[in-house]
Amino acid sequence: DQQVKQNSPSLSVQEGRISILNCDYTNSMFDYFLWYKKYPAEGPTFLISISSIKDKNEDGRFTVFLNKSAKHLSLHIVPSQPGDSAVYFCAAVTNAGKSTFGDGTTLTVKP
Amino acid sequence: DAGVIQSPRHEVTEMGQEVTLRCKLISGHNSLFWYRQTMMRGLELLIYFNNNVPIDDSGMPEDRFSAKMPNASFSTLKIQPSEPRDSAVYFCASSLWGGREPQHFGDGTRLSIL
Image 1 (cartoon, chains in turn yellow, purple):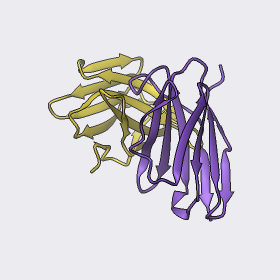
Image 2 (cartoon, chains in turn blue, cyan):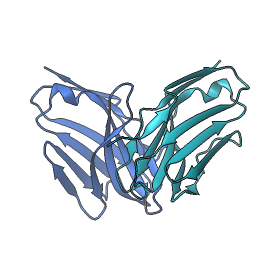
Image 3 (cartoon, each protein chain N blue to C red):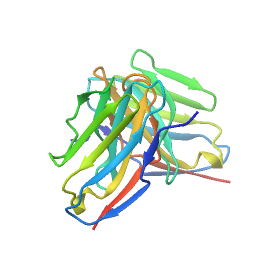
Image 4 (cartoon, chains in turn cyan, purple):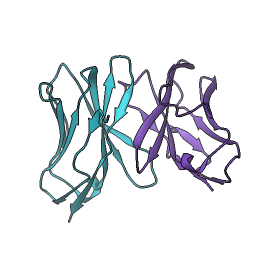
């Protein structure tokens, strides 16, 4: 039973356009969500987070949206840059602090 | 600032051998997480500690796996005896406190069991 799903294994966008990465979850105990970016041969690095009491959080080119009723969150990157090409993981955290990661979406931004 | 440091970066060993993976936390961080990444199962949380105390080890696959924090800045993940299905990339991460704080990951140990 996969509690956090990223249904698109890959996404390709043109430089300058918007990238939208999606994540769905099933466990109602999740109340905090984070996005991480991962380059090959490196560990994931934190991008942005959102608490379940909010529906939007913005940090520069990155915005995370949370729809609690749909149990869905998305990461918007605008404008996309070639350096954004990486694997993006969403992670959901319970109130006990336990993290569950999705399988990741590979984003390719073409110049 | 030094990040999370994992060693070794690569390990190749024969099945049945004991494997020890090491992790040095970022100074001042109080939580430590061990993950395993495979193609089949993605990035799985194996165990996490707060203040050197294991909080949740429900992800540890079998008794062959054990993790310790002998002090506040260092952790080991041991597999004894190792099996080919243990082959994966193992990451450790640390955070100021718990899973809600951003976790800082090491670059992983790529483990191959022959």
